[in-house]
Length: 372
Image 1 (cartoon, rainbow, N blue to C red):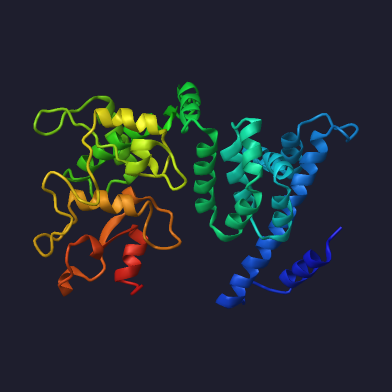
Image 2: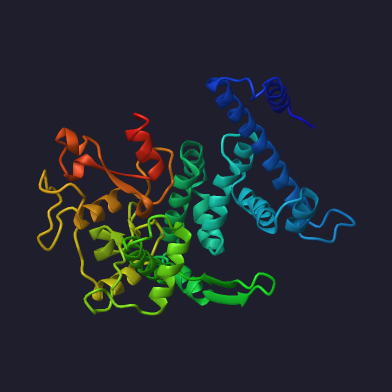
């Protein structure tokens, strides 16, 4: 049955027509929808728990199968809904918050993903932090909460994430097949973060070269990426005849690198995927270590009016400062952003770090043409 608060929410939602609403009313519709959606997600938790208990006669299926078949969902979505029940059993306040719309299913999913491979002892430590976790979930976006959950789980696990990385490496796969109907060749790789960072960076490095070739301005990015992938696999040398060595950026604070993880550690790839400290230390044995704040090899982070385009050192610094587009609600990754002058160059803005921001193409246009 509907609880009184939910009944009122649904009735208020039914009275609003998005077709004729203004901006404030549309935002109110979204808020009401989120409340109802959270309540429905909490029902899924109760259903999954009931099915898992075996107390339902005649139901010979897993919670994910029931939620998927009867709810007309994909296998992935049904499994995520079923996994929320385990989180709510461990942290019951999250189930109440989900039903009230204070947190979303995405927040609960973040906890499920972060704790999936933790042992019972670590789960108990996590449960002791339930109040703090709930406060963070009510306050933070899903992306922020997801990162906090992964960092906390890695810290509590006590091995710095080595066990997780080992599992990821063991589960890495490459599958290839040919579609007999279309004749298209398919390649699917699922690899650990360390391998993925190397592969991704190598492709992106070659993609920059491919983009600059004559005649490529009108070719879709997807096709250019395919060309870059083929050239990386073929080990195409750089223009000077030497082999191209891709740059893999890892962000780690000095105390973590020296002494190990702490409560405010940063130890991850440039796109936010966590790496074990021991893995980063191994990479450092073969790497050029460049302190972002100070610059290195004579590269200046402040170049004033001497050049317009951000140099390599500044891009490294900005990558460390911004994981995504600087727009507050945009999740386009840094590597797909353009570097923008806050005070425009033509108005005597400097090419100094404090005057530069990464912006995706959409928000870069919004700044210049849209006056954002």
